Length: 211
Image (cartoon, rainbow, N blue to C red; front, side, top):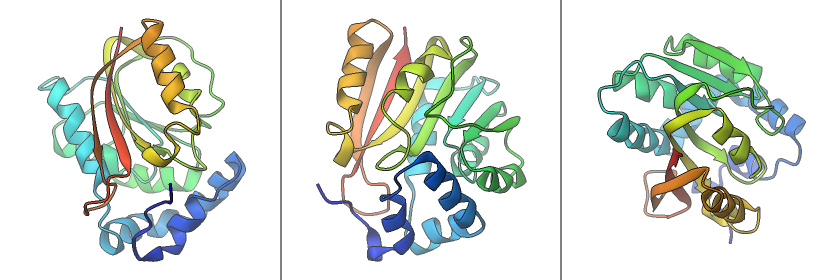
């Protein structure tokens, strides 16, 4: 399945062809200053608003819930959650420079430069987690879902997008089915959407619940 790349955008083409974690770190460090402008103004990227709304639907008025934004980037998801009233958000990303942009939005409690492919779970810490655009070609691998589940408290929700084009081939389908079979998570709902403001269905949006 080919990737949907609006206007053949050179940044998206490069993003989908990243090979290593260091490639990803370097790429986003270089793109950080113009990331929001390119995605929102040039490409009508809006998936971050959808996932924030999805999480808000299940969290309701629990505005102090401790939320982890995985692959926080420049903070578009965190900013959307803050606009909805949520005040206790941490963010993780591999790129130090995108986290500088995220920090400038003043919506995060803490931000950490973490390689999500390599982090080791400590203990259940979060009431909810959210991730947009992170589980895609050249980015975070399927095994990270298992580790993410371990840092969620019982009954915590996890909203995320997974690129449909890599859903089976890159192991996400099998990992999710195994986590469900093992009684670690439940899939409360999922829907296919576009990452952008168009009709191309390219990201599968999940609502998981930690059991």
